[in-house]
Image 1 (tube, rainbow, N blue to C red):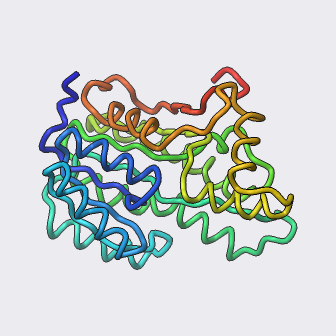
Image 2 (tube, rainbow, N blue to C red; image 1 turned 90 degrees about the vertical axis):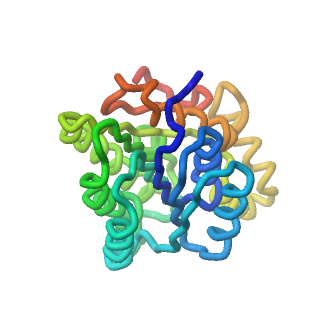
Length: 262
């Protein structure tokens, strides 16, 4: 299938590893030029160069802490100076949390709200004027926005807020023919999941791999974690003109984990 993406430009946050990196490679394989953002400048630069070499597309990289409003403002000025049009926005940057509501301080809530919600709000304001008709935005939320995990209440709450923001933005922008949708992944194996599994597994005296395998068998009918590449293929299709009637929807890619009809 020709996804009609060749020559378009996509901005991907959290694009240096995990889901974001897989999505970047998926777009690159379709001939999409990339702007990748992440915190670690060395990893970001290395992966950007590799993708450009492997796929023959243009790849810019910009190191940024997206929890910082000031850094996003500078990034916005850079985008407006260097780009007349951006066709696709994948808001993917984020990380898991582990805390108790009773003891988590305000500063922890503020950090995750800035990273998961306000980064998307701030970047959307910047990108809307750069998107012509036919643009697409996808916000990477989580199944935890609908079906929370008990150990990360702040992650659950801020991802739920992101999902609602995405729906509201979809209603606002469709009159400009800019499509907005939400992705709610389930268990996708990422560096962040391995970090979490290491931490939680140590408390039980088991390895990260043992923790992940047990969790997948407990939660998902498919019995395993998905790969970033499996999820990335859905992102690429949804951002393409082939998904032109998909507006304001939430898609669960979760191996059957969601326990309600949605």
